[in-house]
Length: 240
Image 1 (cartoon, rainbow, N blue to C red):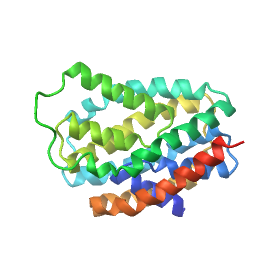
Image 2 (image 1 turned 60 degrees about the vertical axis):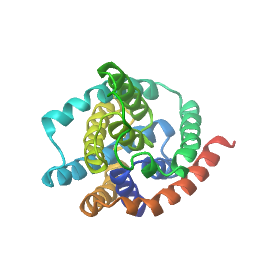
Image 3 (image 1 turned 90 degrees about the vertical axis):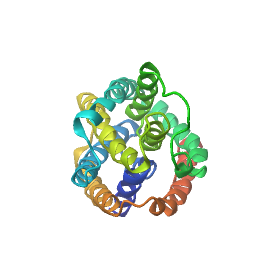
């Protein structure tokens, strides 16, 4: 429950909460492939809670913001399809490598990417934005961990959103891509509903708390905790 709360809180403010929940599910005895699918249940429900809170505060424009989710959803379907077809040992290694790769991202402080206005210059072309968010969505469909950081960075640096709007829209995009990825994992029989719903109870509370507080500085401590979790989890998954 505590791990789920921390993950939901972190995911709502920035991302990388799956670096907590994935290892917890694997340590609970789920095969890596099933853990990867089951994790989406908690992410989906926490995103519903957070998106609802952001919408009530006027930070979401659903017709416009749902259009921003289209390329990420398309990418998520591809990423989830690839992940669900991997063997358990390959998936175990893939999760470990992804977590290891996320360490410098977490250490760099994601808030630094999105502070202030987007860089001056011409706006990115529509096709390049589509390609960027398709790639981010494919990564999110494959493993989920850290995708929120990439989405916020893309929205602010390439989409012209301010940090608060970007954070709110990020939650909506994660909701959409997770729903589509979850359908793939359910169809492949890679979702354990009981542990997924237990984990979701904690993540939903964490998401609600983070959305209510809506302060960037609250993610600092969680980020350093995620560094330790990611390092330990990568070592556990990659060292025979």
